[in-house]
Length: 106
Image 1 (tube, rainbow, N blue to C red):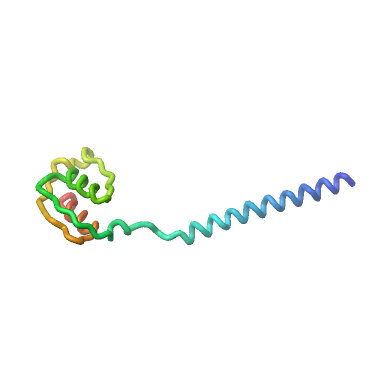
Image 2 (image 1 turned 120 degrees about the vertical axis):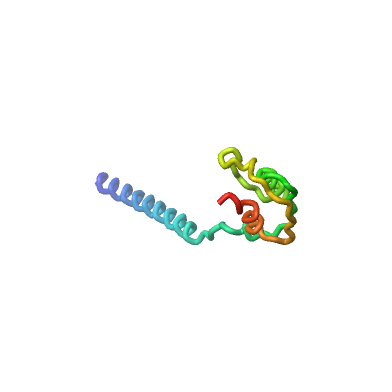
């Protein structure tokens, strides 16, 4: 009698545990499937910025003053030697500004 009661109690505990794990996996999977992509919002942001004759790292610093943060390795791509001509952007997208700055690197 005790053995049967032990098996029944452990069986119920096992079923509850597996049900909870399955429920958690379902919730996490649903959240991942319903999550929207986060690319492109920054590139579509409109900014007004002006560049003087300088190099690309200085231009990126100017963008950072507009709360546009860019991670780059100037030494790896020799960006300090890449020159930027003076130009003023008024209500242009970040995508257009970055294309201008990086047009000669490709």
